[in-house]
Length: 163
Image (tube, rainbow, N blue to C red):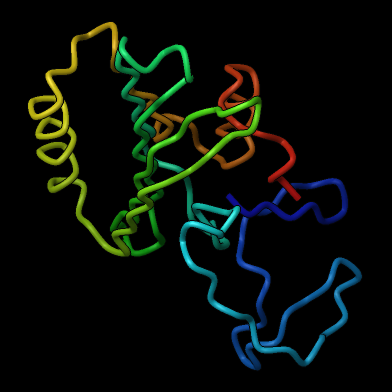
């Protein structure tokens, strides 16, 4: 997630000026630089939340066999302003105290109706039991601030990625 802190208030949005495609720095000065598209494996911000967008649902699959390495398969979704979802899924594990992400897949546009069958297919194909699966429904929160507070309270967000 990409979060920007302006005037002690949190706003989630991509830091580009849509008119000039220039990057804005923290002092709101324009820098005439074209943003580079990073490879998903190297993008520390898995979901870039723009103004008006909110988080939707997060799914965590934690197989018993991979718990020693803190292995998880994660599906994160956000709701776009047009009502469609964006989804990112990836493997997560900790190796020598260093978090690792791999097999990152992005789906730029998916409907809410398409999401549930995808999640159920992952559950079925991986033989995931109820104690190996967690769903966080963030759509019940009215604001992105409330969503982030909930994630912080449940230790589900790394604050180093919140700006």
